[in-house]
Image (cartoon, rainbow, N blue to C red; front, top):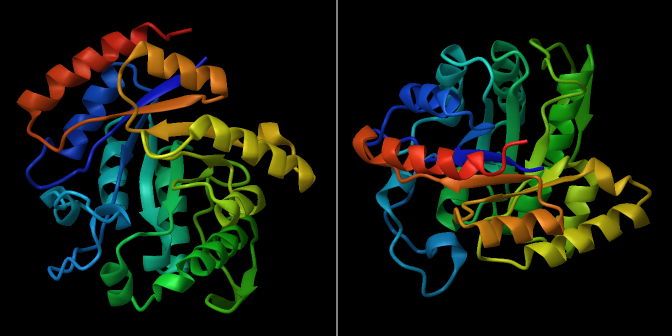
Length: 286
């Protein structure tokens, strides 16, 4: 069994997030995911994805709507489709505000929020938020741990190197218990695997960049060694090609969610592709 969702950069040039959410739900997709970037410094020092020799960065990276505003709008016009961030750049966001945004979308959608998170690759973007690239992983870890305190306790407090707050009240609380799933993206090296096992509910890398099947095995082994049930960690993939041979191999490896990519384009280009994806997903319906 595999769930199939869709993702798109929601920009000012593309089909609106409200229309896309309604159309995706009408076609039976399990989830809808929106990426984010707060801004892209025009210096463009860091190559796309941090990979030397990468192509020029597409303009959708600096034209995205705010994730949580877009997801809140999507929640208002849908009732069943899950709403995900694919991904949230946690190190660039204030964790107290982020906790409230996540909980608010979860509450307003009656428990349909999925929090996909990442460390961030753009050094200049991170720097403008006051975050050193070499510290971003530690900032993400503390931010997530702090948010969990806010989501699950009536009086929450947290004291770390990067995140600190005294006993505090914060509502709304998420509808999902204990909180919306926290799903990490990226390459699963040793430090990432340790983070997944410690504070995440799932792992979702981008298609074509990593040995996903091998990473699933490594993460399961690490969970067992840490005394955590490996089955408590879900596995999915962003941007998977809509090809049965690829999806079948991922399902066999233990992947339970596939997210197909949509171009940030107007409705006349997106909706026909959404139709073809729906036909493809129908072959995996239970």
